[in-house]
Image 1 (tube, helix red, strand yellow):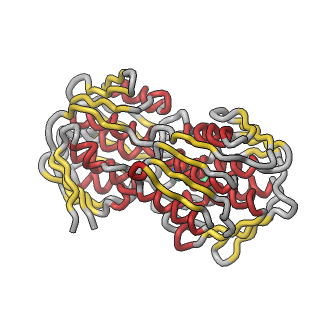
Image 2 (spheres, rainbow, N blue to C red):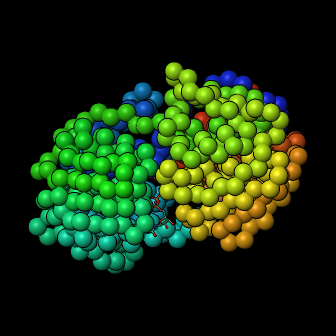
Image 3 (cartoon, rainbow, N blue to C red):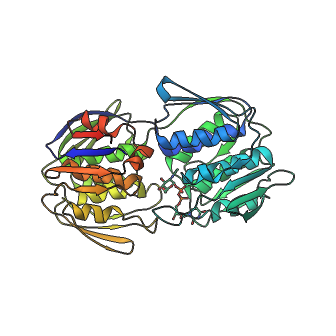
Length: 421
Ligand code: UD1
């Protein structure tokens, strides 16, 4: 298994190219099941989660070929005739559940394994299920699989989500594109990945309005056609690399990075001493003075502070001036990085969903363990400015969501390498 070895060092300088968004791509790929015609995604990130989704879609009968070293995914579902998403694939990645809505819309029935718990919390699927049930599906849980059936096809419905779940919004919108009649989805998620999905579905002929707001209206159509769509820039990768100069000092340009996708995150960065400026091709993040100032953070749905940047922000707060309080409101167990950061000399006290971080002047390198995707990159950020060497183990988590992290950070002067065993 690979490890990442980081030697703490001085200020960073240079450019990093931002990839297409993993989470947008994972929602866009299942949309291929909604049409007999080809769907081509450009600007796809080269990540193991994307390969897992490809394996899942191929198991359902889709044909996928990659071009431009994996940046282009050409998909065709004209012969996709399997409606069973197997546990062996689904258990590897929760986003596999995004085939449920498209399969149901295409075949009128679907059997999809429940993904099971994951490290950051229970993450049930009740919101996906109740939305599809409102559209006329009957869904039962048997042998660990959701068996869904919509006799006579799905029908438009007026649905209010109890919580603005990203995945439930994506599944419902995709299913509604081919349902009979109008679906109104209230308290829908507003994340940029939803907007990207809707833009692609519209190119495929779907009739949708209101994406990016809390109410999305979908007028069902008889069929969708082929399209080509570029995956939106990864806002979480952008935010992660914006934090690199916050902890190590210096200035980095994020080519393709977009501040408008980051909502409250940019305001927090400004408040703690990071200067952000837009360029014609991306943005520049620069640390104004020495250590950043402590700020408090509450994770919220978009445009609030993203839960997917909480671990990275905690790493930065470990060496900030003062005390910061980070409150995690989206997932119940998303502080596994705290004990690892403590091993590097951080002062963190976790009580339930609240972590209090007292900034120290320096962290020290240590062997640490990646526990999930965002936790692993937070340890790399912490290591950038730590004294000595940090070895991050279990980097397969990192490879799920960060494309060539060692090359990207290496290009701005970080002393980082991947070591294969
Ligand atoms: C997506 C992102 C993930 C991000 C999260 C929140 C993808 C592939 N993943 O995950 O990176 O951290 O949004 O921004 O896009 N919930 C329920 N019942 C449900 C569904 C969700 O209770 O049926 C709860 C979850 O347990 C969690 C919260 O709602 O506490 C948010 O989950 P959700 O927005 O659905 O996240 P995902 O779509 O799984």
